[in-house]
Amino acid sequence: MELRHLQHFVAVAEDQHFTRAAERLMVSQSGLSSSIRALERELQAPLFVRTTRRVTLTEAGRALLGEAERILAQVRSAQDAVAAVQGVLRGTLSLGTEQCIAGVDVAKLLAAFRRRHPDVEIRLRQAGSEALAEEVAAGRLDLAFAVRTRADGDQLRSVPLTSEPMTVLCHPTHHLATAAVLTPQELGGEAFVDFHPDWGPRRTTDAAFAAADVRRTVALEVSDVHSLLELVHEGLGIAVVPRHFGHKREAGDLTALPFKGACEASYETVAMLPPPDATSPAARALMVLLDTPQEGGLTPPPEGLQHS
Image (cartoon, rainbow, N blue to C red):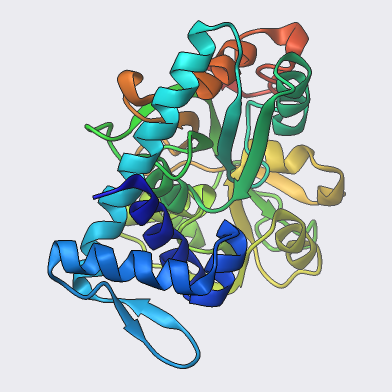
């Protein structure tokens, strides 16, 4: 089994199209098809279901994809490690982050990284925390800044960055706006604005309500912070969010109220990485910068936040 066969297989799986994958890899379509057929012969199993419009993975193809991605990530890590020993950091830094993550200024951090390591190509992906955890564990991302979604395991470890309490945001005229503190029981009948279930704030809130055995209705589901704040501002629902959301300019005159769950509802930001022996030199270099305040590391927490 040749590495180029695995590279070609992963490209076709990602693009779900032989022509697009061939263009991206800068190889002929016939050469790409021949490479995939050679891999299928060696594995004695079809890897794709081919149609005139696209290709999809077979069960065997899905089984191979995760392993192929891990193998290719290990090869890249080995190449980068050799270059690092020679005093040159190069290759690619693939970083994931959830939107408006607390505790780290991603743009400032990446700018500092580029100044230090101009030969490293930076790739950034924004997604929900659970999706990012899966991508790091599979070797598709070098690291990610997200909310802790699972316990550490053989393929994933978490480095704590910041934790903060959750808070309730509502319009100043809302009937709950004068409350001193709010619990899941008091909020159970309300209409909520919230993120998709994969996002860290949503997972934290869902866990708090589940622990209190209180059902809630997410009437309006959004994929960005600004839309959430606008909908709450128009009185279309309330939101339970990390406290730093209330410091955003778009929060305007929204009322922020303490939220007290059955257990302490804490929004914990982490850096998700592979095991130490699988962490790329670029990821290690970024983590070094993260601990260097003058180079763009951890952001000072607003009032009420604590660094771990």
